Image (tube, rainbow, N blue to C red; front, side, top):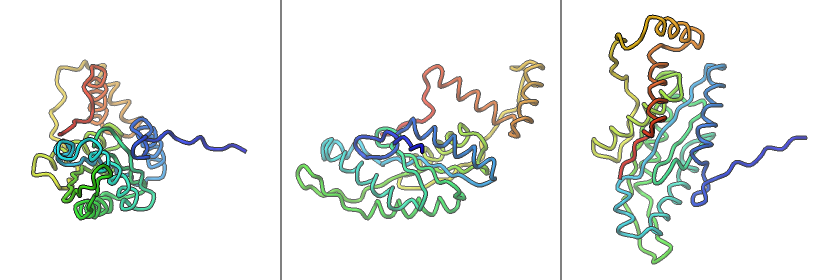
Length: 226
């Protein structure tokens, strides 16, 4: 009888880590395509985390991170998979969850986080008024490819940040430019064939290729904010 191998977790929060997030999302999207069920994915970022570290020290920052990890486990709904993506940024996978349902879960999480009082372990100081921002995208309404969903969730998080923070934002349709003479006729014909085989749009495949190119040359797919 086979036994499952335990997945490595983040030392501080006990959550799944970034590498396993990508592997898990790949597997869930494959199942979702076969069963025609939704999968939502969100990026969650602590607002003004640098200020928390400055005011309460790195131990106080760690207390905030571990508290948020606990709240993610408790308030993201049954079956949700919270992830320590890196630094003060978290990700959440919502299997079999429509965008609107995931949005309501994130809104409730945002309110709970704001109302939570955190007592630091080092000196007993109380941290209140904590804010988070989040961006949300959903398969299949916001895209069929993982790169598409992650980019749109990232852009939604960016909009939440630049419009005042402490907000949840949904993915938006992207403004596209038409295909031009940058591509040969043969490339375009092969692209059309590939899109038909994978049953996705040509634009999605081109954006996936651009994401791969940017990552190849060291441009991370996810922006970070202080």
